Length: 584
Ligand code: GLU
Image 1 (cartoon, rainbow, N blue to C red):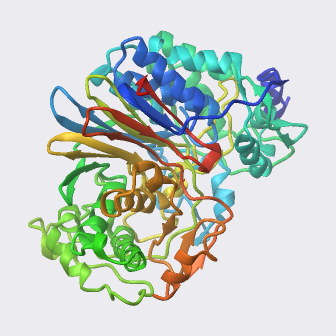
Image 2: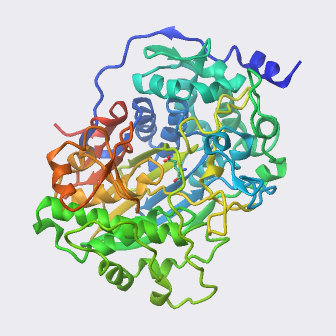
Image 3: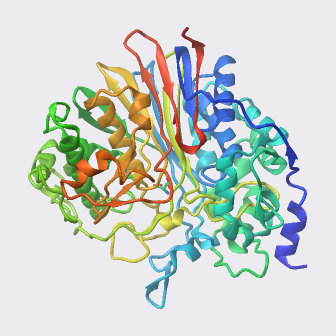
């Protein structure tokens, strides 16, 4: 029997689809006291709240929410991927981060995405075993719980196991994303069996169960992270990467991952990127995510302008130009710090920002700009890296971001992903989770800092952020959306801090994403608006993607001691914000 037929046979029983009523209205904003949570999934927010109500802390609740998102939002995140968690520890008054980014298998070389010296087709690279990095999520959750949590895997995975077993109602957004992925999913028997019916996407209103994922979670609950990185589940992952469970005669590039790649995987506890902006102290994600450094550089540039007293269009023009400059530097210099000596100190210096600010024309949008010289602004002159500009490589977006706080003041801001919607498209047979395609976040050709190498982590854009004011948490923010993550976080901070918008308005405002291109990405319908016309006067040009940009979640710690959890009020089918004790 061929491998594809075997995979199909053992996964055909994966899910039972029944019709169920559609969910009631969701609550994207909630104010009250005690712990708070904002996620894009109602069930995930409920899981976090259940753990908080059982006495768990923000870290426990974050793992519970993440595991549930892996069930209800499996195309954007899950144990087949990786992520970045930023944690504020109230007792110690400090912020730490957990990098559990996927790593390149030991077989990787800079030529892995080249054929006869040419970059291979991007979509072909995505739907392949070769795109799969060694997953870091379970190891990240383990470190979070062991070091900073109060509960164990068994306790925090229980709500997600329940959702996977009982099922959840497929939303219009979920069904739409499955439709978008039909062609990718059709190539894999295990994936078609779980998410397609006769080759077509599951429809909204159906109840979708995933007993295989419940089994994977139960094994982790019983044996800890080793259940994932050693033994039968590790073997199943390696098999799915090296001999993808193809269907319909699909031709898919295999990967080369070993069991040792899995057993050797480590998460990293890293110091956050710390920057200041108008009286706030911002804590963001360091390399291998470019998120923290790029947001900080753009804000340092913007700090030189009195945005709040300017006409809105002038201030937004400056936001776009600061983002453009910061992206030029990001693209030239940033990559995995264990492989590349990136000039982070220079990029973060206020003096460097002042130099970059001189490039901005107050009245006119620049075309694409070149990278600055951050080495002039730092002590460390070792191994200067030649800037390696390249246009933005094609990338797909998605991912999920959420945030949790507890009654003791601990705070988590967490972004995790399997890279593209639906990752590589490969569901691990028998375990019900999709494998990432994170390796396509590498630049396919070099010489560039972010080329593929064995054991390296591809540069990310994830930017989970926690802001403090006067030494206390003030707000959290983060979003999915590939490299637009950086602009969504940046724009939301500007909306909230400079324009004084309440966080829900700051999140719901139209998003503009300038990443040093000829055009600025905007959301459908924006181009004809008065805001767009005012900005076009500065020479900005728009590119409207078919999709909305990002799906942010935030918590605001109000001066009166209450907390406000805020999710999307319009995008991604509306998110769910919950607090332990609601204010009336
Ligand atoms: N792979 C992307 C990154 O790490 C995130 C995926 C997305 O949000 O689209 O930056």
